[in-house]
Length: 555
Image 1 (cartoon, one colour):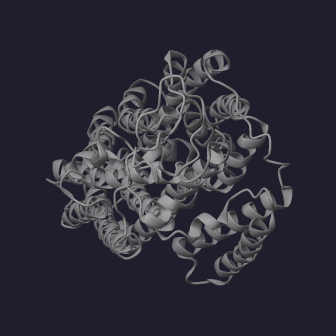
Image 2 (cartoon, rainbow, N blue to C red; image 1 turned 30 degrees about the horizontal axis):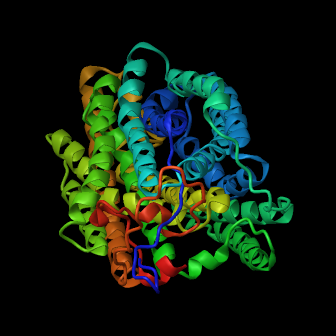
Image 3 (spheres, helix red, strand yellow; image 1 turned 180 degrees about the vertical axis):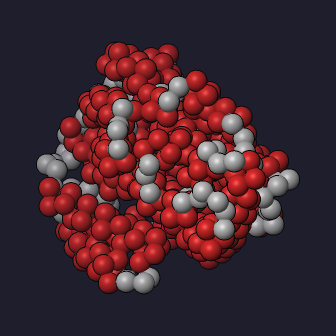
């Protein structure tokens, strides 16, 4: 970008981060690491807690789903609340609450108690990620440093995805299932100890008071819709009235919420951002990628343990490459931009994921362990380009004082996608499993409780452990074959989702192009950066910058 009169490069005056800010970044990486570790470890623990607590298939889905439901429901509120009351304060309050609810989940004695604990964990988790990304945008105002900081934060998130199954698997080898919920306790204690000194406080002095009606409307929109979709997917087609009524009940507050945001001087969410085609498209594509990964994640983790008969520790190691696939995909995004247009890299990634899922559709109950692990890793790698560019686009679309609200939109899109993936695709897999495991086939096996065995494959595997050899093998074969079919059906659905994501990129982000490079500011400059280009430009490597279309860049 050049000065109109002189033709000289325009200088963006920004403050470069020092040692204190980089130490603060290390502290902010802890919540990202924790949340990702928690999800991966929970998938491994599902068969164990299902057998120990005797939970039903529906309760099993609620254990995994309710965290994401509450997280998605409260993210908009927490994002804007941090801008108002202080991002560091909200982060530390959330860390305290997260620690206490982790203890409650670890020592739950029933499925209902565990579901309640997971719901409270979701509320606490909603205060962590938006505050983290918003503080990063505050501490790192230099475009190049801010891009590096978000990259490091993302790497920690992906690293947690990889480490969660490994650490969780080792803990499940030696401790009870509740130990996986204790992974976050020492991390949160460290954050509480170091955070007050290492992190700056920031609040928007002009943010105004929190609009409580907007809070109620956002919750009234998100929670009923997600519940209705989940219930319909879980078998509500036989009696769709409650599920449809819930969805309709959520749509009304959603419309009122959007209209209210447009009328407020200090809205929770700037709905005008969604008029930008690229902004909306990126959020939608991020949601779809998360949906497919979460749906396949819950199926593959159970398949590895209950069908491929892998121990929890080994299963954790086998699922670790998924997190590294994320990291590699993110790193390759910048490399691919040297040869391809930005939207092309996103289409390549979505196409790679779709191809990987299509290979999984050919899986059988035996001999496919390595192929399933490899293909799921490649699917995660394919999401990398979209996630790498999308996070920077969303957080960089607003001035720093509104970064918390913008960060909540980025997190909400991925969390909402993951939650729907667990609900829709998890419910689809459960329905296919129940359909394939016929009661007649189970009654033919001596000593089998057909009703219990049809709940889920983990329960069937637990029943088989107490049967004579021949009966156990027959039950494992019947249940394993049925669950493999369920996994392949879900894989096909994931492939369709990824193809849809590629089409959205082509249709909505067709003008995506490189943004003008912003020259590096003087070392002692103090003016804040409010441009959308603050995250997405880099003087030294224009090809590595996160690109936007002209209408987004001019914002």
